[in-house]
Length: 105
Image (cartoon, rainbow, N blue to C red; front, side, top):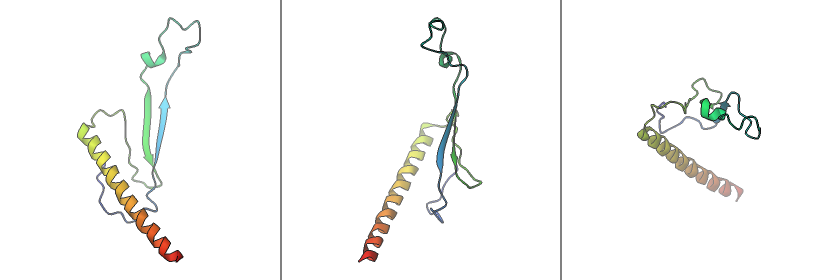
């Protein structure tokens, strides 16, 4: 993952959507009498899941769940980054809520 700075110029255009695509081939019919002796495709073929972060920017962040190079520390750091961003957004929301309330009065 690419490092992110603490300050962002604008959150308005920083919208990202997690998109996942699952690709499987020849799923066995588990209800079929004829396939009772065969193994299911999940046993015989590896499923592929493609996930990426999509927005309208050229520098999309991509997370490949099949990549085994991510360590526990990488995942902990990513979680900590998300918690920090959540706290920042919560604080900003509270400030805007107070500002809106004062403008109504």
